[in-house]
Length: 487
Image (cartoon, rainbow, N blue to C red):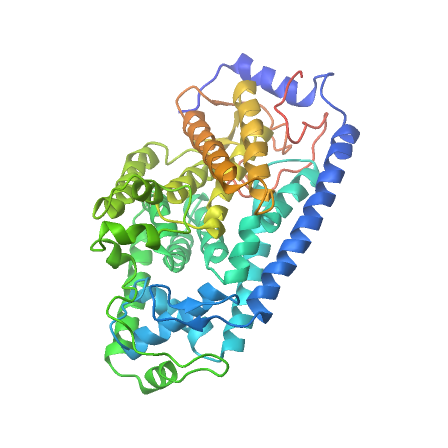
């Protein structure tokens, strides 16, 4: 899969460690320090703004329209809260947006206590997920310069999507953290059945939002070389589904009593209308004239594109499923390649395939980490050995990485959405194309010498799961955000 001559690998190492034209570490730091300052400022402003809306803005109120909650404060959190309580109370005709297992997972956090309990509990969950994502992404880039890793640690905190996700109380960061955490358990060698089981449990929990997790399911099936993770995941998800249905249909008094009691400070739930959100299932039967209203806030995805072209049900639901199915053969063929490239491609398929709003732009994050690994030379080939990245691919990855990050850092109203959305779509499409090209036979070659970034001796695969940080070694440092080699 990854193939290159020994001479090419030696040249790659020379360019990355001994080329006199490479920038000195001090010049890299001079470039990175202002960037760190800007990202710290953006992260602070956006995290404070997001958590302020999640915790302190007046909570969203129940609506009788398609959207179950309306208002400024934690609107999606309140929507999930209303849905979860309605599901277990079997209230009205609403069937909810998510499957039963999702409501079983959300119940302890969102519906078991007061509104304040739900808001503060979910804020803590989001903070923990973001902290873990920040650390994991920084370590996985393979950059040896600490400031470069710090930049990548700050990116997921400074994105506009992160602030929007926190403000409405979405599950995006939690799902992404669970997906990223599951992959080392599926790829690390030697791997015990316990690792596979833990990976399967993490993936089952990530399926709380199926339109995010679905494309990653191919990695669960193909990466481990064992059916244990997939079987465990299916068992856990099936168990959660059975539990949710049992509690709903078995008449658990505490569940139903809590579900029909209106929380203080929130309007009492009114009767559900016949047309009120039957969720995703409603899309299969909704008239074409209603689809623009249902997809109004989405952008840069296949479903919105079809709606804009006037194409209605059932194709609006079939098209993303076809995209996920098409990912399967590719994931099988490249199951032994760098796990972050597989994560990146799966994340982009999820982002492009299904209806998503701005808060789900975080699905692009694994692809950005994969691009960074191409720039730093941390990409792994089959056998978990480092692979030599051709300078052309590294330079292209650097350019796409910068363009994608800038598009996700800019404020909401600048540039206008008519410019921002096509620009982001082009950058993400370029990232998808480059990641697919990078794992083609002969595109990225393997190295047979000591790793210039990590300092590991030949044949040492410690930390080779693609998630361990590169350590300092002798020789000149590679430039953090540019392809190795002469400028």
